[in-house]
Amino acid sequence: MLASPLEPLRESEVEESVSDLVDAPTVFIVDDDISVRESLEHLVAAAGWRPETFASAQAFLARAPAAGPSCLVLDVNLPDLNGLDLQDKVGADQTEMPIIFITGYGDVPMTVRAMKAGAMEFLTKPIDKHALLAAVGDAIERSQAAADHGAESRMLRARYERLTPREREILAMVVEGLLNKQVAADLGISEITVKAHRGRMVRKMKAATFADLVKMGERLGIGTPQKG
Picture 1 (cartoon, rainbow, N blue to C red):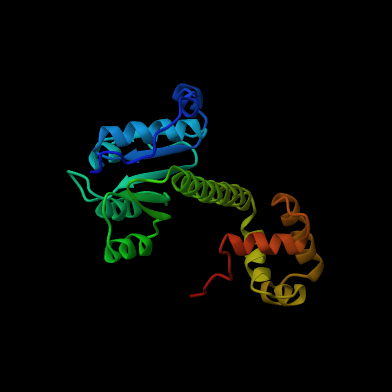
Picture 2 (cartoon, rainbow, N blue to C red; picture 1 turned 90 degrees about the vertical axis):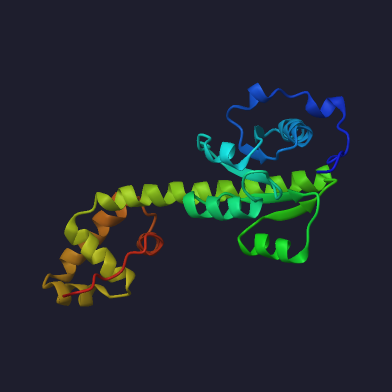
């Protein structure tokens, strides 16, 4: 570990209390050096995010999951579990969490492994605070986008579950590109009935247009069920 991992912070940069950031995105910080943890904690809080610090990988893994957007600032050289191995464990056990690595040393193979596994950034100490804040900002944006996508998918799935079995069947067919007359012929019903089902599906799924309904079906991964 380096003695001075961060540039000195001005008093004005640490004014915001962590207790005032309950609803802010969470930045998890894992480093066994207390001076690094404290410096990063103040820097993150001053930027408007909520820091949570841990001295070991196991302490981080035992934490309560974040309720909203989050990212992980992770030291490579930890006493109980290598940071790269922790990255693998996070990827295997949890939803995607953007990771920013920090280290007192680094080599090309280490950096390549981290980036291939999805790391946002790999920063060496002494850490440039502006580079770190930029990386954290990008990571939080990615986490927020993933959360928004997940919320949208859950909303669409809930609406889809309200469709009748026949409506789901027709939606799968139109997502595959079948015309009304083809759907009617395959199901043995009239085109008028198909159009009526389409209208109800548009309303239930809260789609602006029928084309929008088809796009919703595509996002849900809906297709024609396999027969037999």
